[in-house]
Image 1 (cartoon, rainbow, N blue to C red):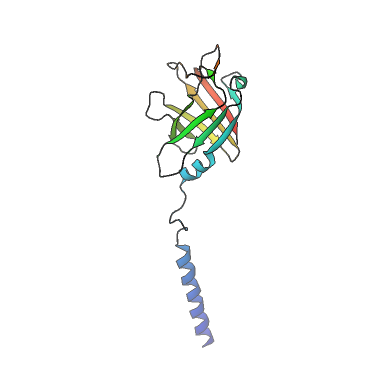
Image 2: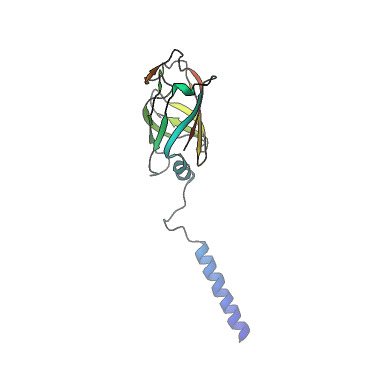
Length: 162
């Protein structure tokens, strides 16, 4: 009798463990890669350095990149804007939209579907965001706040911290 009750108890425990291991989280789904990355990207990012082959950080005084958006599904677009000062011309418009590229973990598309669409490479941690991109030869840049002699064409790298 003792063996039968122990076996029955063991079977009940195994059945309960199997039942709970198959359950989803309390929201009914697991966070997608895009949702996790968006959570890291959303916020205010303060410029630490700007480089186009030369240090251009002083051309962007008090620049802060604001990335906004709530996850509503895969492939959606989100917003960005800047506070502080950008040079004129600037490699960045003052605001726009973006979406994740392929792969999502390293590429975002700035102003997707528009004439100013630019694929950008990024790395992000909880406290640092590095964005690199090429401004094409056909671009005149975007209006900024300060005047600068050099154009914006070429490879740029921006380092931000949260």
